[in-house]
Amino acid sequence: MNLVELLWQRRNDSESSPALVFGAASETFRDVANSASKLGTYLRQREMKRVAIALPNSVESVHAIYGVLWAGCTATLVNHTGSRSELLAALSDADVELLITSDSSIESWGAIDLPVLAGDGLATVLADSDLENDDHPAEVDDSSAAVIIFTSGTTGRPKGAVLSHGALADANTAISKALVGKPGPFPIGDRPKSPTLLALPLAHTGGLCSLLFALHVGRPVVLVERFRLELVLAAIAEHGADTMIVTPTMLHALATHEDPIDLGPVKIVQSTGAPLPASVKERFEKRFGLPIIQNYGQTESLHVAGWTRDELKNGTWKAGSVGRAYEGVELHVLDDEGVEVAPSEIGEICVRSAHIMSRYVGKAAEPGRHVDDDGLLHTGDLGYVDADGFLFIVDRKREVMIVGGFNVYPAEVENALLSHLDVVEAVVIGMPDDRLGELPYGVVVVKNPDLTEADLIEHCREQIAHYKCVRVVKIVDQLPHTASQKIARSDVRESLLADTTPDTSSA
Image (cartoon, rainbow, N blue to C red):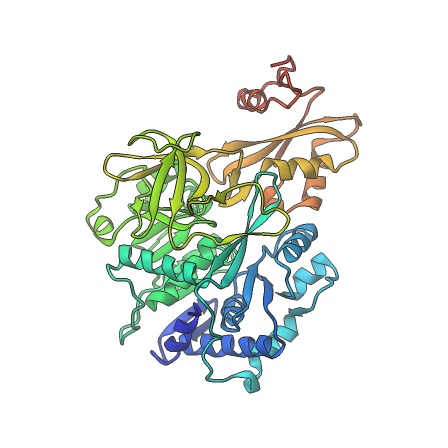
């Protein structure tokens, strides 16, 4: 069944209950459904199948996501702040036929050899009453691809994870059973529900899943374009949001802000997108008296583990844990030989459920996190499950950095540095940062003595999205190497932590 069939049903639930608030704009489920049906009709008339969306959080981005799904198309979600080369790679990997974006993004990227719906063109479609109809969303199988969300691969090239209509619906059911006690979906009823404040980008798994879950339970969403403290606090005060879904970076900003902050009606704070540093958690909870709820999942697996309604209500969660596996999720912790480890022993977290990804798309489909022949997704994360079934995340198996909630792989950043003609060697290491979780630090060997750290940072920003770029660059005469002449990353990391020049002796 089409994931947004529920949106068609919601249009008649209540003509006055808000579904979406963005700035001064407020829309009911009927409003959102009508706009989605217009865009869906437009796409179906043109027999589109694969559509990319590269928009900032906005009313239009919600309309676009639901409209593409309404038409039965696959929605490829792309970071609107990424570089041109990243955009083109994503469009190619997903074999996209149409790009929905903004005029400002097109101005930044330049001409795209693809039909584009942006600015006035998109506004015209969404305002065209001739496109509005009472038809149901397109019929699709549960296994049909609903969205493609890009995540980084071990080589640094982003990989597109395909998530089906059935997978996303099953994920909603799993969360609903845990948090509400029933699978849902639920009628809106006469009393409006308190809204959820959503500051995560909708092109990010956490943002998309939060939006879809709100639709599932009939809960309004207060959406902000991006996390700016004044916007978030104003939205909380004006709309009475009692749930806040944010990243550790956002929590750090709240916890360390100099001026007094009133979170007012907020009762639930959910941290997602990256591991939460203990120092940030402690600082936030001490300041606001609100516990931060952590759960676990990733783009490829969606929801894996979290907390039940009773555990949240009674305060019976375990400190440091991300909860227990949701109903319908098989959680296995395996050693390097693929053997299940004993309780409290560390291994790779592997998952089997009805809501893991179908596959990767494009040139970067292999290698990386994968689903094996037994249907088990190897997450690449290290952790353990204690005797009571609670999951604890320990570290990442690979060199992935998580910067402000986004995955960043060193190889991609190194390639950006190495594209400079004067760079001979480069290595990028993730260094701890209380605000963003980690920051990319670069250590490079150059052949031009006049080249500066600032030059290299600027060059990096021209190649890839800014959040992936090195924040600090250290120029050295040599990098340490192993006996096989590979760069000794551990030596470089230790040197950066000690703030000394890396030892160049052979390892």
